Image (cartoon, rainbow, N blue to C red):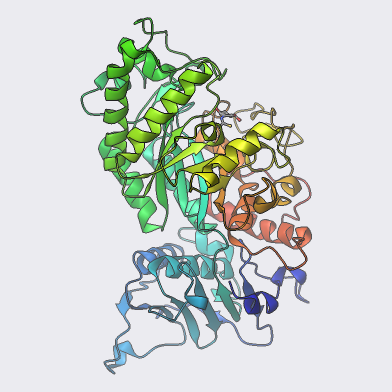
Length: 542
Ligand code: TNX
């Protein structure tokens, strides 16, 4: 993005409160450029407010209007911004105008937008519906937190947004959160709620970890045993569940309205006990193992033996074909991690067959970094790095670079910074009166640690041009209720959102204090939304 934009960056977080002690608004992730016009009168929502739309803004106008309606009780119609000249089309000072047209976004950035807020109205401009949607998420954060609350009480000062100019576009194209629905299953409603919270932070990918040793969570036509047997379990015997094709379509559609692409993962050839227990034919000895509800990893594997080749390849084609056909997005994740029970030669053979079957669906393949030990990946396969901010050894570096050497890019999710299932330092209890989370990735993760890493500086040779983006996974071995998932996710996911979206400041140092201020502002919003979060030390919560 043009460095000119960077040069004009003014951080609202630098002035945390005005003279009256009112916290200044902030936008998270931090926009490329954000100027508050503190001398100017604010924008004010009114009973007459309309969302006026020019061009194809997708679901953005309706989703914004719904939120404003729910809080205010006002009508807030969505109308076409025609130039017809009749009274109804005349812009009002309380209207929100959304314009999607070529030349609106800064530097024609695909997901970029501009946002102008003043006493004369609010205006979002973008080249795409995605840009317009991200613009509405920024506007949301300029309105009082109560705007997130259904049937809210109007704040004393009214529904105002500070006068401001925002120019914005993401640093990375792939800004992901991963949800593990295999260790514990979460129904469609929970996933939709999560998508709402991800959208506020401008994530554009939801990676669904659909299968693992403890559960198989997606219906595959012709293979009822996968969900009949494979979906009945979870960690700790907390019950099973799976998505029907219709459930999955609902998730995909809900995500698409919020400009989020669903990336399904079928974890192969390890992490497969649920499938192996459902289908004896997939096992080398022809015997289905017992279902598994513990939290060990690395003990299960598909079988590379020629006697099982036909059954295994048919399984791969059925499963990957079905999931690909249900998924409108361009990616299919095939796992590849922690296959400790697969002999090296078998692993390479299986990874070749798995990635070939995935590529045959027409999708771009994604795999965890271990799969980079194969030199026979389909061209352009994306790697996902999960080792540490400081790589532990040369092998993980070589495996990660292998994706680039084979024409692909890399998604960075270093476990000691981006894994949201790592414990908090204080190891607090959840609402269920227990402590949760794991600590294998160098112990608990602070908000500073989640915020203080640079994705292009981890693996030599995997720099700005090779990093497709960033991901924050939440693994759910220890999390059986969705409020426990939220408790671990919020607030640390905001750090990953900002690394994914916001430019690295010129000096190469992010402003931690200003970031913590903005996280506190988000806390007020989560309170109004009913989202569970851990009020960790160091954040100036109000
Ligand atoms: C490692 S890192 C895993 C998962 C676990 C997670 C727990 C990676 C690709 N796999 O199987 O759930 O650690 O933190």
